[in-house]
Length: 220
Image: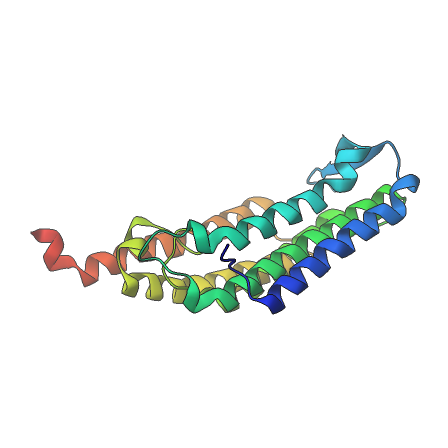
């Protein structure tokens, strides 16, 4: 079976998953029967999961994510080869696995009584993830699984490239906004509106640039 990730990135993925499993196994007997699983906007716990699920969920998600990314090579339809950016896929995979591991360690540390502001940690973690993803977004080539997939980017290599160039800047800005919110009390409504606007920019841009590049064809 042909796998997607290179051996180097696969070993890093396995390392993250093993670290996750070892961490859970080491503290499992000390965990309470209910694991905090959700925090409200005030930073207060408002939902719990049972011990087995709460302890192992992130590990299972990491395994599922790794397995899915490994199968992209097989799942990609003809004409959408991912060979030219397998390194980028490996980097993105490990960024996401590292993020899940961070959240798991923080969540279970809180369950053990550590005084951590998990919502802030998640906010900063997501922000850093977006900044990192923004730096690699422009290296993706047209595919059905990763990236800004609109009808217009999938219809044209040039639109895909131009849209992901713009999208990379938007991702970095979104990440910076998320990270800064940990210390800068931006009103929640303005914060949400800003994130939505930045997220929509690449989609709208892909349509505009497609119409501009293929205006004559569209008229016919």
